[in-house]
Structures are given as structure tokens and as C-alpha cells.
Image (cartoon, rainbow, N blue to C red; front, top):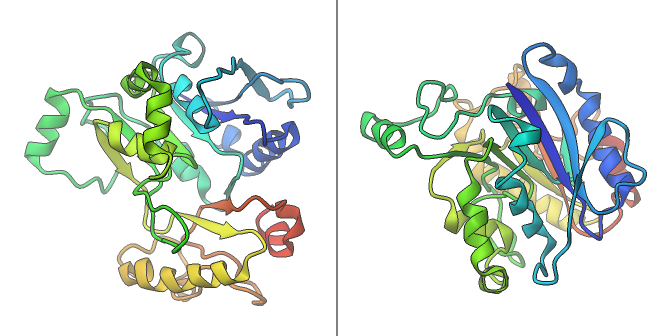
Length: 295
């Protein structure tokens, strides 16, 4: 088995940001933790490969006029590259704004079952006999995406955050990409007001979502203390209510801490959280908290 982590370079993403994102992953030794039985490779889908770190393989991107939302270039990766990625592999489309934290390796390196395979489902996957038979008989594909636990008033709410992290096996999500290719302009227009890429994935994925742990993924709003305080409020309402049953870090004394701890002696982001997405368009290095505890 292999794990391929692919980053898409949009026009507002610099090569340095791509490199920094891969360095953050290398910091957690994900290429060493499973050495010998799960080879980890990094790729960048871009038309400007100059300056990429030698650890990052280049996937040539051809930009098209009809793709007015660059997030949709991620769909290209769903329908090919088996000659490169292999037929037995886990592919992860990784957003450069997603920051890995402690224990991120467990999720990244977890196996991804091929379509219809019910023999190697993740621990805790809840399905009755009838559902398992449906998955097997219809060879339904699996998709690993973060689920949403917070909603802010000025944002469009979607069930999934596929734009942050999208895990799948080999070419099992190919049909989603082929559906998009039938009418790229129409699909982009249809979903532009309802969540864009995330909304498109939610509507057209016909398979089984592998749920992420409650609170495993979260956000952080760059230079916006008010929104981050709102995250703390919704963490109490939407995540902590599932503790202790869904709490998995070893130190229970941290269980009822804030999602984001400001000016605490040792706490920063909740130990429940393994990935943080940097919300907003500001340079994250202008936010001292992000610079200290995330970057």
C-alpha cells in the first residue's frame, strides 16, 4: 500500500506555501512512521513547478478557461494517474492551508478500503448487516472527508469540508469527475452560492463517507478574535457534549478546555484536534497566535 498526498497550486498559492505545507507534514515523520509497508509520496498539481522542494513530485496542470473556481481542478485527480499513484493506494488531496497537529499520522496513514470491500473498515465504523451487504453488492466507494461542527452566520454551511482534505482509494471516485466534465460551467454556477466545491462533492458522491472523529478537524480565523471566540462557544455546544465517550487523547484533564486557549500556560488548540484549517485571506504570519502555535 502507498499513501499519496497531493496539493493543488491555485493562482493565489505560492510555491513557498506549497513547500511549507509539505515541511509541516514531514515534521511529523509521516514518511518514516510507516516506512517499509506504506510508502508516502508528495505531489503538487501545478503549471509552475519551479522552486518546489525535491521531495515534491510535479503533476502538470493545464488550466482551462471554463474552470472559474480553481478548487474544481482537484477533480482532475480523481480520474487518472494510476500509472503514477498505483491501483492499491490511498490518495489525499490536501489543502496547503490545512495545518497538521499531534497525532495527525493516525488519520493520514489509516488504510482506505477499495470500493465494495467491507472486510477492512475502520474501527468504530457503524453499519448494520443490511448496509454492509449494500456496500458489498453495489461496490460502493468510500470517501474520507472532515465533517462540520461549527457554523458562522456570514458563511455558507456544508456538511463536508472536502476542500480541506479528501481521502479516497485509487480511482474509486472517478465518476464524480466525469459528471463534472459533462458541464463544468453549469456545475460551477449551480453550486457557487451553496458552498462551491464542497457542495458539488456532497451532491454527487454516491458511496460511503468515512466519518472523522468529532472535533478532529477544526478552523482558526486569522486575525479575527471575535470569530475564534465563537468557535470556542460552538465547541462547547457541538463537540464537548460528546465527551467523554468521544474523547481520545490520553489526558482527561484537557477534555473540558477551550477549543482555542489564549494566554494559557501550556494549552493551545484542543488535544482532540489533529488538523486546523486557516480561515481567511490574511497572511497567517501576521497573526502571532497562528505563528507561534500552528505554523
